[in-house]
Image 1 (cartoon, one colour):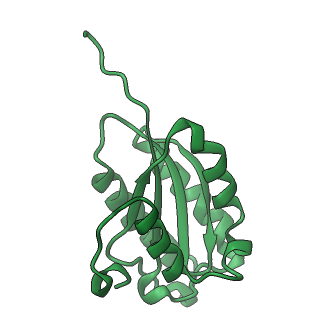
Image 2 (cartoon, one colour):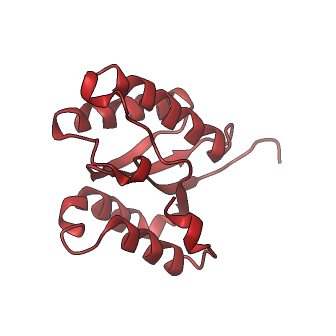
Length: 150
């Protein structure tokens, strides 16, 4: 085969450090757009983004030219620097060290986009911690509870 063909769609979830409510409504939309720009800059379009004051969900069409770990390093580093420039209230802004990422099949794309779009509703009844454990269990990802939420 003389060319490389890929379609790698990933649902990524990560939180603010210690799940602090730092993503305020007045900055969330701009933050989402900024992260979209970072992803586009790495040829990995952001298909959906949403979250709450303490975490984000990203649906990314991952480029064949970048590892997910490298993309996430750039997304988290660059968006953290950007948000800190938005005022004194963001001076202590940090993302958690890790992230969770799950592959998404074409048949599940609409459901994941809908899930991401309705984060506020989802988190009226389920905490971020409960959500993350449920994702890991649903995707049969082994995890150590001591480190999953650190």
